[in-house]
Image (tube, rainbow, N blue to C red; front, side):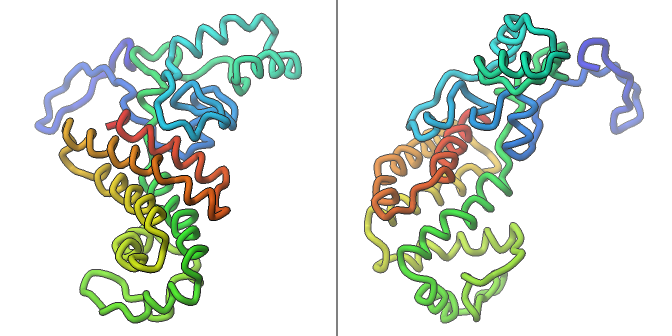
Amino acid sequence: MAEIGIMMSDPIGNVRHCYMLLAAYIIDTPEACMLACVHGKTSPFMMASYLEFGDNFCHPKWTHHITLDQLAKIQVDPNDLKGYFDACAIYCLNGVHVPFWQDWPFACPSVFLTPKALHHWHKQFFDHNLQWCIEVVGAQELDFWFSILQPTTGYHHYSDGITKLKQVTGRVHCDLQCYIVGLLVGAAPHQFMIAIHALMDVRYLAQSPSPDDNLLASIDQSLLTFHRNKDVIMILYLVDLALILLEHLLLVIPLSI
């Protein structure tokens, strides 16, 4: 449709010849890797492997042309599955030999693959950032602090604490993010507080309805603050692949706005 166009009706009933561009494709990280034709330990957005996810700078984008050039260099028959997969591994490709976007004008995975707010920000907070906080201050202590908060209209009151919550939704993730920084003051190490505060700033700024250059600069500054203080998380033995992947996904935010 992007090449030959399609006839579509506009809101007042006029028929127009439209050319559909692929502007955004919002999916989870495993599916993003599949569409970008890279294997699971490689970024679908940048030319970085999992060993480089913790870098505090953006690697070159994994563009449409780079992927297609690498596929063109593979001279193995795709029907020879083992041989083809072995050849793809040299370029960190996953074996998809005909990407659906290869003939789609202006379609580039590094552009149309954008962060997914629910999983990359909110669920990431609940599954990892919140667990770090529980590890630092203790589950019983954090539950007690949540239970004695003054009930506020518009926000859920966690009278039994939050460490035993099951099947939580995105709304719960957002509610917890509103409380967590204030509850940690005076209980968590200062550097740990700065790192968590910086991550929360990135999440709030990225949701702005009217982003501009000043906001992007603020996001970059918050990311820099996090990188300067993330060592405390590693010292507390809380580092894992989730932290490294989180760092990489946050770097993508300014590029996708």
